[in-house]
Length: 306
Image (tube, rainbow, N blue to C red; front, side, top):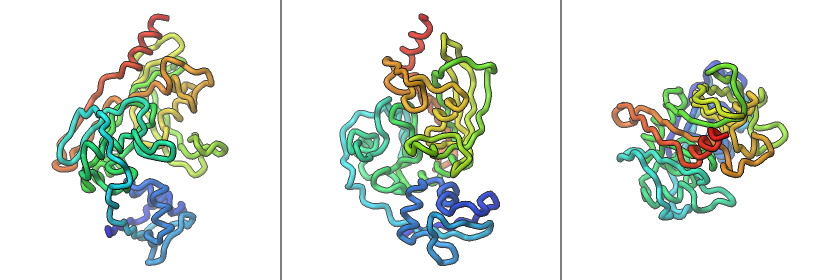
């Protein structure tokens, strides 16, 4: 059993307990925090907290993390992976479009986690449990590109801390609808669950988390723009939601874009191109860049011919 302590900061005065813990302890998702609360593993002054409890500045919250479960509930599968960087602590994977990151109902196999278990065996961090071993951050099924995977808990905690303090570089490229008046800009808008459709995210003030996305024009195309985007925060569907909020949804996005399908894309034209971070072991800088995948370059060529 691992024990962690958090001291509630002034920014969380009167905030929900589950929101506070999940934001302060980045390696745990909000749903994981809620499960720990149900089991009585998150305490304030020795008393179990529930997700709807409110916290105050200066309070001390204790989290009792169970030992990682043996990774036997997810089947290892020999699925080829493109791995541009790997060492004893972590690896960086260039995920193809269409691959789900971790198993879920309806996607029990064929996921990145299935492939990682075959490639790494049990050499993956256990912080996020048997379904998400090693997974520090995610990208959507139909988003291609780079993500980092931790091989041990120390690496996982270091990388998660860098994400939380915004020192972890995540740079994307996307093709979005329409043209911009400015060459660059920043979207600062909170993201939370859509008030009606709970499968979607939305810019909302209710039960949301602050989100910041920076964008830079790379090329103006007929009816579209090719952008470089940098995440300052990493909320669910952040780029897709922020671009739709601006009125420039990502091309091919089936959830936040126009109803009209772009058959050549089969999902959003969004690629995680650059990852940069301090290595968890000795602090040296690691920066990995991936080439734009074929579906992305083919769409650019298609637009340039118009």
